[in-house]
Length: 528
Image (cartoon, rainbow, N blue to C red):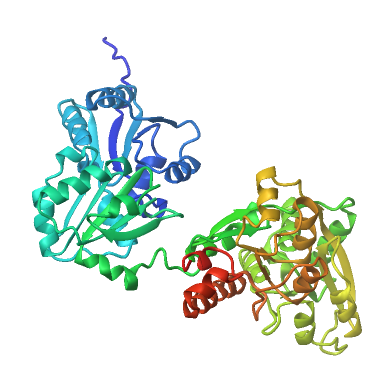
């Protein structure tokens, strides 16, 4: 009887195009290949922001390293990993077949028995041109090049006569590109747009002409994209990425990372660069007996209503339910009121639809205005559970008592001041390094000032509601933005609208007044 030695499972290799830089432009196939990889080698043209996003979702033991050496050297690294049964990825900027060196790697791998695949990506030149607002219709010529001597300048000159073209090159090669275009007969006055940090948070485009774009792009580093031709003039109307309302604004978000997620995502959609700084930490109550009795009372039918005033309160109750093996079914017969939409969303996440959310002002006063008085006939159970923070005000409890309800005002969690942020963030807060700050509660105002200092006078202050506005004013802050409805989406929307108004005011000013204007931030700088 013969025995066979178990063979190692075959590994595989993927050449993955990262696209033009924005992590959200990764294809689903590219994302799947990267998150499943055991080893990733990446080109220097892949932005650090994209690598950071990939590392956050990759396998815990995945190895990342830069691609070094000739194509044959990189191919050997990939083959070694695959022959060890690993999944290896070579991540490149743009599209894999847009790089001659990667084509040589694929040819080398193809001569072996190792399985490989090539995942396309949007080319840098083409993708960044779209983000810069320059269309490339008709005969489209784009190129991502590492060596400008390989450029066919005669073909580029022909493309410029018919419309426009785009090329991605290193900033240090701009002078060579200019000289090549002029030598090929391209008119010196043809329009050129140069874009740095393409598709990134700080993408910036300067427009000039063939004979002057090198000087116009002075200070640009890394990979840049040139779009050359008549379509460059379309940027005024079609520059959608850089013309978003909050583009380039550095916005301070004084909330925990867990709470700040939705707000930061909305800010990024408007072009802002959010910086999350926790000002409070949430901890269990010092004595859990109150919450234990409250949960038992919910199960026993002691309460007619539960009133939630924050997402943290919802989580605190559900954590207690989970400890005791309870679920949403044990809320049967108990009605739920929520102070606002964010809190209601947290309740819905647990499979329960709240009965009451204020249609008007989302605050204690707004909730009380719509909360029915206790009726002994219609409400045989006359008690309300109010699980809240240890520092909550008495307004809501007092109002419910005035309406005839008995209230169990229970400490569900404690809020404590967070540790101070790093020195560079504290300095930026006090020196005007942030264009705006968004406060979502009075405690975020008090705690931010306590751990980091008062925001500079040039920083736009946006508050979620009247109570927060009062606290900000007490601390000597000028309140610039307050939405009609107290919610995170409305707060971000209000800040974006404020930025648009600033831009319109500045655009209407004569140039001399713009230079003397006290309006700060990226919106003002674009007009100076």
